[in-house]
Image (cartoon, rainbow, N blue to C red; front, top):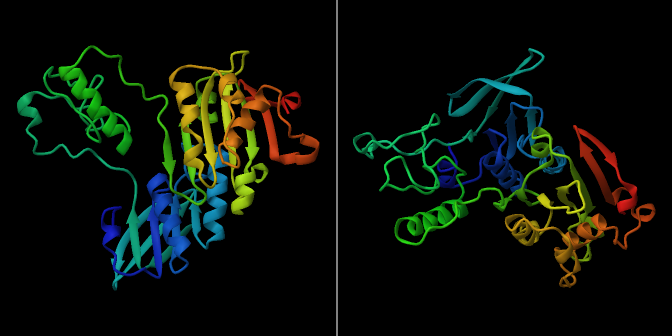
Length: 332
């Protein structure tokens, strides 16, 4: 099955293997494992799931999946997958050369999508494709000046909110005034995992790959009054800023209950290229999850009321430069 076909199931299978440990694969692995009636196997060719995210995000999701009975095949490659006697048999090969054969009721293939551009007559119009088979575009305009594109057929992210925004942008470019190009640097995303993951901007590994010196501040969910009241204290807030006095926000990750409600104010700061002081000084509603964002910013400004000798591993601040991270105790 694909993520389309899986919706046609009329009953929960006793066992399911998911090929692909990206967002969609992990989301469906979470759904079925949370039901408590399906034994879930997740094939992960890398050393950890969600390879585009930071280690701490992947770790907390992995722990949750395993806690709910899922088995993650780390560092495995699929040698074959076939139907035998009404079941799915698949064979894995691991990095050490060992192999394993497992039989399950159903298989979900979640290794990405390609653009659905066949039979549109693009070649007749002269519309150019890129090397991934998507339609090439420059800020929604194709190489044919009167043809615009939006959504999953473009070269950018295949997300509903992105497609909707691109469509609006394309219409304004066609008929409206001159506008600045779309920015894909502050897109807010949600991963419906357990716990929920919300993100905006760059991750730590993005910063390291680009050689950007940065500060990171992390606050555990167990310090947040709303999370405590909901008894949902698994998770953390993490904000990444430039390593200078301006402390411009580069990115944020929130993992935990109501995480998606915590990122939009930070997304606005990234969009407007602002620092953190104004948001830190605002009066946030109490008790709310977004107070965790405020406390992270206060930690960066050396104004936090939380004391590290009491909360110990619940507060973290560090500076990363040349892929070397150094704790900054004075920030907390």
